[in-house]
Length: 391
Image (cartoon, rainbow, N blue to C red; front, side):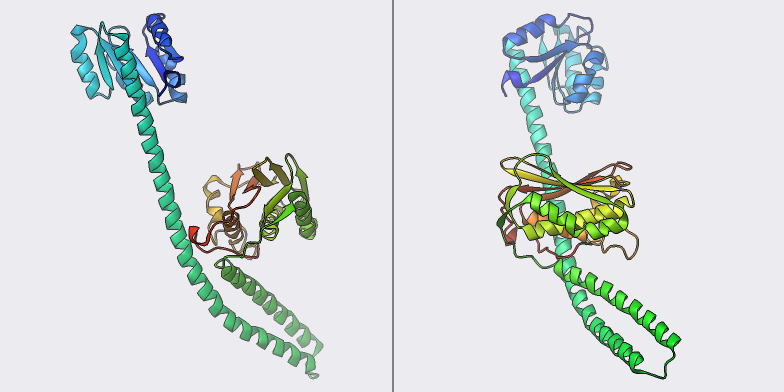
């Protein structure tokens, strides 16, 4: 690492004790050098834990100070300075987590070399930690993908099996309705009661049929059709398509372009499906008097379509779970829990992402981020997903 990239903290007991050393290091190109007491340097250490600390055991480095530094930042690497009579304390410091020590008087070049080595160790440690986090996330995604693939196969099989008796029930309901209509001996009240009961059965059948269709569609990869279109036109269509639902719920739905051009090469049908689902979810979340907005932002390479509502918000523990299949916070009968899962799958299929930010009492904001020219995922890059209906 270059000297100007390394942060160095010189811990002193009295003001000015490390000033001359700071000047010497500045002469060697170290532009990020601070000196002061541990209390004065604590905010810097908290903001940037991975720093090189130089501690003079003879000038402010009393017993326990090294431990206090390491307690504040395990990532910091501490270089100890000591006189010949203090080597015992310095060795003990190595056992307590110090990086190295130098015996005074020492050559400045030796300290500079130690600082570089300590900074390299911090960098390697951070890289290893980052790689480990990436591996953990990748393993989690692979596990989730395997679970979703198994769930999709099971769901599709169950849905197909359910559809067979549904067809029989639907046919029987139609036959009963026709018999009641033709039976002149049935009283008016009996006809009315039969009609009400059979209508309830038909509504139930329609709901089950919609759920099974979603189950089947969620396991089928949609054919992506890339074409050029404009997001402002698409947003206007979404507002129009959700108008009746919004009007019935007493919710205002708006759209606007905040920045950038609206032209994009992607699949307008799949993006429309995602936006309709997000807007419908927002309408259900805010209730009467609420507001849902579609905001469009972009630059030369990327576009962001945000669907923002002023509803009650999403609890922190649900922010990631809402994208899981079948997870729903809606009352029974109001959602299948598949809409957001399918929508995130569509975003991934188009080479983008679907994320959410929310605070309780401050609404929710879903962001669909896409390349201005879509590069859909290849078949082997992810498990089968898809879908055509919102949940």
